[in-house]
Image (cartoon, rainbow, N blue to C red; front, top):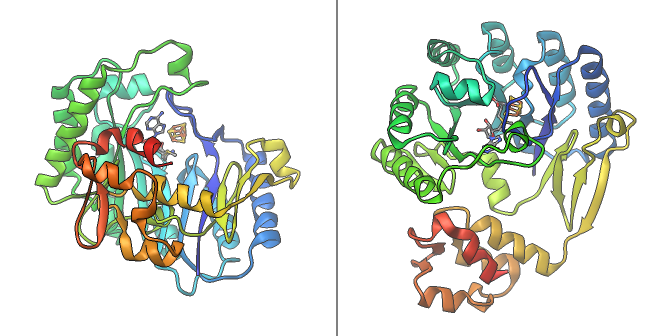
Length: 360
Ligand SMILES: C[S@@+](CC[C@H](N)C(=O)[O-])C[C@H]1O[C@@H](n2cnc3c(N)ncnc32)[C@H](O)[C@@H]1O
Ligand code: SF4
């Protein structure tokens, strides 16, 4: 049993902050891209049952209905007989009744929708264009069609934003009444419009205040904080993303996708021309025992529940207490433990990088 990620790089407009592998939509390129994707899957996929599937981007939902039909034809090359979770990334503007019905017909059972904010001033700054009413209308449409598992992305720490503006945004996010909310602090990434325009990140203390504020508001409304940036209603934690955080195996198909299969990790090319010339893989790295351990700690401690001690022992044939500095970090209360798990303490989770440096 495996998981699979498929990357669709097309977007109809490019956001000021985005460093994802994306390109402006073009009909001819999309057709060529989908042909290459089919070829890649036919070449590398070994036929295992796929338990979780995630189509991300870019903005997969902005493809036309014909292109989406072609995409699902390709997806059906995978063995989906044991599929538990099938997510597709969407933006509000491109969601239509017809596309949602098509998703449903093709066994998509989770939508992940980029909203970021409802605040018009910031939407403009981010170069995004949905209206508040449209967000409610499209999410209700999705629910009516039968999607009960919906994630929305929220971005905070927007340039010169305040806690009171975030409070209004959160009121709206909560009103959507969805099962999952991902909350990302804005990162000013090189090569983005924000970076080029020398936009300043907000003060670090305010960023932390916003992080804690979001946590308080969402947990008060029965969202479980289960990963640094992710909140879900009970039972709606993302099964696919947990594959990453549990350091389990997955295929990555498409431009810039990464994969982790038995004993090796690989990254696909980010070069569109190479990809459509069927030169898919950029690098392959053999994963040693030490690498596997390093990933287990870096990814595993992103989960608020932390790392399961028994599962760790079974996976690595050693006790987690043998990991460098674990006992010291426990002693300093930077890590905590209960009967089954070791986890980063609440005060340190926001600064978890400082702990990870000591561990790996
Ligand atoms: C691939 S996009 C989501 C789908 C769709 N393309 C959209 O934007 O609506 C993934 C999410 O990553 C987050 N993101 C992207 N760039 C970011 C950045 N520089 N800092 C923080 N979050 C970012 C946004 O919340 C975005 O919705
Ligand atoms: S945030 Fe989403 S819509 Fe905006 S450029 Fe990035 S991938 Fe495209």
